[in-house]
Length: 387
Image 1 (spheres, rainbow, N blue to C red):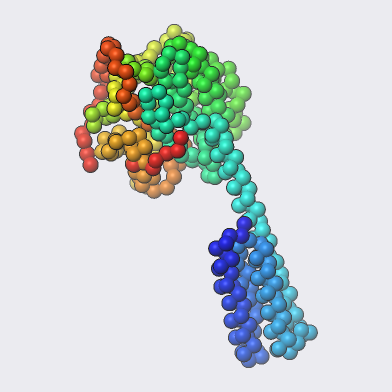
Image 2 (cartoon, rainbow, N blue to C red):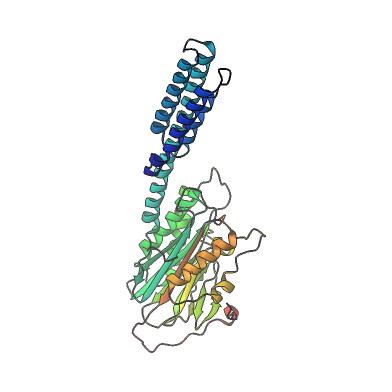
């Protein structure tokens, strides 16, 4: 596609045609600078489309013919050869420019389709849902795409609470989207249908075990297919949240400037393993007070490596960032993660940050955080998101 800025730059190849033509005319008869005219269409192709490149190429051929007229006529073998060579080279440049423009259009369409698929599949969470403020970030590892095998969703239940899921399909990129869609579809169907978190998680397991093989890319990836996931129920009041960990990295809780790793005491295998009965799904309660922030993430975040091979120390870094809002915290993590890696992460990476804001304060039993998951980090030394 020809850009307006490219139209301004066209003065450069046009000036080159004029300069080369004048210098060639004023040079001795045995000096031939006309072949240098091919620089003009080649330069035009670097910033413009095939039409403007073809026009500049035609001017270059016309300039070569003008030189030939002044240096012995168009019928000499040397001049005819130069004109033909310049025409062929200019045509090749125009063809390459056409192919590049066509590929750019295809990539643009693919990117548009990927963005649409992301909106349909992920359905970015609202910035506020109930008493919660939400921010999120998705980094896809697959080039030219906006979506991969990581997933998250937020939905309201029938009992004045918010259900949350974040998960990670084994594998990455476009090949894992089908598997992610199975989990997200089952979650959205069951989030408001099932009264308890174990019932919801069991329904997810049934759906994944039934449908995973139908959508998994078993031809290119014949190995085991499963999805790690965290499933949470967050009441609107100050009741403890409930969490079931299906083989996923544990979330982080930010409370009074300290970071706690919420290790589940009753973890279960990833979804799709079809290993345990529903009766074994036992939620873990955790305190989540007004002003606290939950940080959910996929392993693409904590396994992102620096050029020296070091993993990204998420918990340590989060403890050093200001946490005035989910957006601010997400901005710091995003910038710091990219600085750590030096480029885009090699794996899909997703972050979901949830803050509890003021709500009705009811007297409820207070659950303490499990001692085996209580890691206090010392205090040390953020891209607002869409959604």
